[in-house]
Image (tube, rainbow, N blue to C red; front, side, top):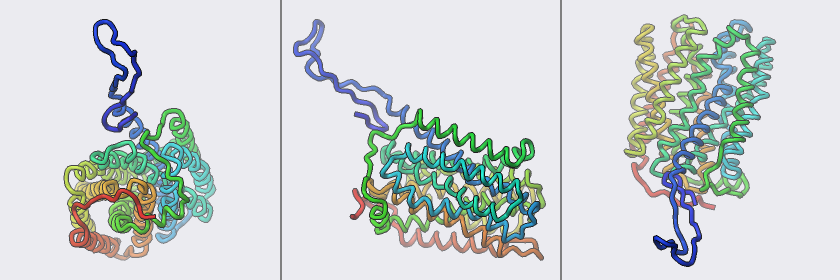
Length: 432
């Protein structure tokens, strides 16, 4: 029997009579500290799978400024191009989370990774052809890669004890580093190898990752398939107050991260007049800061009540967005502002999902995760559209869009402070 986080226990049947030198007995228990290593390996592998899929999901964002120039796109058209994969990646998580409850993380990691290969190649072909309609169509299917997040949270939950799930989900959440890798390397790969070849490289990486999962990944011995039909499971999860409470919070913190990770290259180019490569490097710094902050938020939520971690996140987000609206000068002060914003958003993403892991019923973690993470993705869909629509070309600023972010963060702060409890019992099962 395997006990995640503790040890492996093996029961051996011995001889009926004691051997010379000591009594063996009829039953002997031997322990081996192997579970910790298996936990660590599977969590690390899951994090990598998330990272490469996040890279694939974010293939359009770092190149949006290039497409805008080459295909003569308006600000609104470029925003729609960036936002389309985000929408599909969000909505798809609802179903993927429930399927993970049924088939397990290993099978779903492999399935999502393989399913993302064709859209990556198709987006590369459409970009090379300079076709905006095809980029929109294939960008829609590229959103499949973004559903990977709904697989990893229940996978990590099954491997770790409740007292360490904030840490585990925070580490898995570091797979968001794929957005930083894409922001930094994708424009450079395009310069070195060409547009379509860059997409081929990512497609090959996805294929090799799926093969590695097939050979080396395992579901937790504690995983028990939930074989109920998907729709009833989703209805049961939707009846839980925790689902919608956490969805509201996650739509803001993760939505803010996704929106800025995708739209920041456009923002930086317009406000500070950087070229696509420099804008990508700065966006990568933003994404990396949020990624590193996520496990910190999860670990703090293990130590303190997640509510207080989330309150710090919303308060800091409102403050940083206020400073950003004042257009701090490049390069030092603008970097400090957006890195601070990334840190607060990252801490919030870790805190919210530590809260989900603590409160969601054991038989519905995947379904709840799917809905909550979908809300996060949807939260990332609208801000790029709002930013594009509210851009003031005469004054060259995004004051209105950033002011809306400040007001949203403050409203979420008040909701968390006044409506949600710091500590409450965890239900054992979802209502049927």
